[in-house]
Image (cartoon, rainbow, N blue to C red; front, top):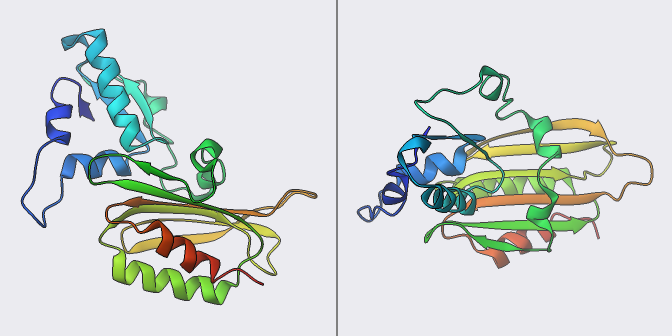
Length: 203
């Protein structure tokens, strides 16, 4: 739930070194963003707020409301953290291989899109080490992966050091087995992430 009138000042709030901006983190994590008190601001301000929210979280749905009144079907059955939703993630988000977006002044997202099949053992080792060492800075991660010997798409998503994944729907006949991953956080090293992923691909 976001206060349309005051959210920008909270997003811009400077925190002491080592402290996180909770407002920014909550927007990053959200699958649905309820933009409340829309009746208290101008249409121009609303547009600016929505633009800012989408710069931080491109995949979360922004729903305008007043007095926090929202249709129940907009907040129930959201399937937050449902891995099947990852399969349908915005393809435009990964339109370019290794694309990097700047969200907030301190938050970026790194997208990786690669053809080929992955060695599951190597992938598990890399992800475990990555999240152990960098998990504090990785706010969210998600992906649809092509694993050697697996007919199904392997999908995963995580928050900081916690993540889960499982096989879902099968790859269709003739469908290109393209791996897609997204990392959202701070201090992300695109080159390091891409090289780590590449090392998990079969030759």
